Amino acid sequence: MSERGTVGIAGAGAVLIGALTALQARINGTLGAEIGDGFVAAAISFGSGLLILIVLSAVLPQGRSGFGRLVSGIRSRTIPAWMLLGGLAGAFTVASQGLTVATIGVALFTVGFVAGQTTGGLVLDRVGFGPAGVVPVTVRRVVGALLAIAGVVVCLSGDALGGVPLWMLVVPAIAGAGAAWQQGTNGRLRVRVESPLTATLVNFIGGTVVLLVAASVHVGVVGAPRVVPTEPWLYIGGAVGVIYIFLSAVVVRRTGVLLLGLGSVVGLLTTSVLLDALWPAPAAPATAVALLAAAVAIAGVAVAAVPWRRRSR
Image (cartoon, rainbow, N blue to C red; front, side, top):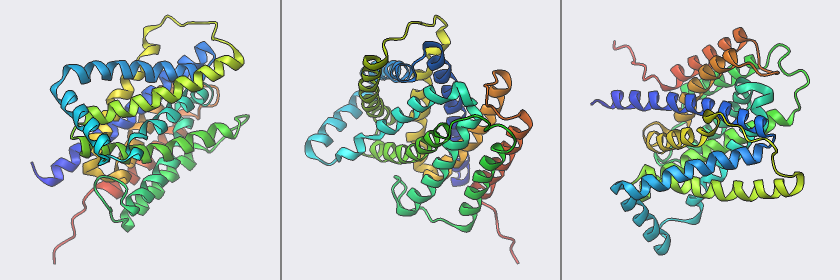
């Protein structure tokens, strides 16, 4: 397959990652609202994902060999400690979903998330943090990133922000920047252990530990949730997270952090528009506004990612 075809498939994978992220946001946000505790909802989501990964790592040869290389790398210190911390950003993202999405909707959550992710991806590619090394920040990439941010501005128009606390937009923005760092970190760990499955497992171990501690503290302060939802779909957020984090570790090596983030923007915005149209939240933007924002963001991806040919003279 040609390099252009490979990059195209990787770009489609990035869009799928964004779509799954939006789906997970809706699931975790609804679970947090149902039980009245976003921290407990996040711990349930990450913990269920960890159980899935433990089983897969034990059953699949790739998982066992990757885990062996992970242990060996930690013992020999060829895998630095910071490469094991990607799960912290994932934990923060899932917690922010549980705390905000039921109120502001998936689209408005995406507004803050995309702003942080796009800016973070641009900076991380410039300093060479991702597994692809230093990725040149060309004019097309900057314009594409600015168009993605313009899509965010469009989504903020109108009366969507009336009565919404400022922290509900700030927290998703921080989560977005953390997601860009997480993608680069998991991609580099994946190269070291030669296994996307093991890189994803490490991510979920760290995130689950942090969220269990946070949930325990929160329950100790406010008390345990009194309602336990019975709808099965509310508990598949962890499985969805396993899929898109696994894909991130594979795709980022081909796309770089910025293009992975921009591709995710397309999936995030288009899927969030659909989800908010079907299950609107109190502060969700109008469908027409969200559609326009998605179109602007998609234009940004096209400018940044499509390898335009120069006309021969």
